[in-house]
Image (cartoon, rainbow, N blue to C red; front, side, top):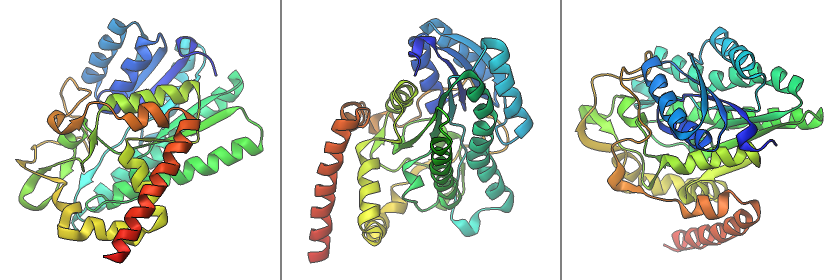
Length: 337
């Protein structure tokens, strides 16, 4: 892989949250960036911050659910900077609602943005990367690519799809000896504006709360930047993401019981505040964007697991063994209870 300072990087969903944090991290390391999102004012604001951090930026307003927009984004990147080294599929939307309360147009929109948007990104980037001699596709999924939560049935389905798509694409590229790497990022709950911008149909009309523990967007940004230079198959962001993954593989029924006991999987996703009147499901929210959301007091400032273990394959394997041991102990105690 090229050093970050020599890379051309495309990031979708770059106007806020994880995408914005990632753009700032790449910019601080001297990358040339093509930033995409629906909301142009917030995108311009991100670009100004990246330029102040030392990065070179080109912005392209894009709706990733539209193939023509994504194809145009890829062509703009090559025309402006000559090639694409890393493509980060990050754009996502969510509706907080029980499945029976989710409308058909909402179901379609979540799948179009979260799943088809990533497929379109890879489809647009692959031939251009191949012509340039290689590259990296980074698909931002979620721990919900492996373990679904209540109120997220369609979102979780889309993230399961992202992981399945990434696995098949990775195999095909390896079989054909095409030097393009595919990394899947699996974050736990992250403090971003996603929860303020989401559509909520929770009981009582309240604003959603990210399921604790909550991590900072900078942890995800570091994982993405690391993958651009040192690709890994999967990177779990936040120790709880890796723990949930391990527990899910060992005993999914146990995870069900953990989330159902006292309704904890439901209660811990609801605030006591009313849901905002606007959401970004079908149109961007007209604000300047931000990296972080409103849950700073509940957010862990640094994920030790991510920074010490997940970004370094050998320590990650040791950490995984330790987590498996802890999960096995928890499982035994649950079975004895």
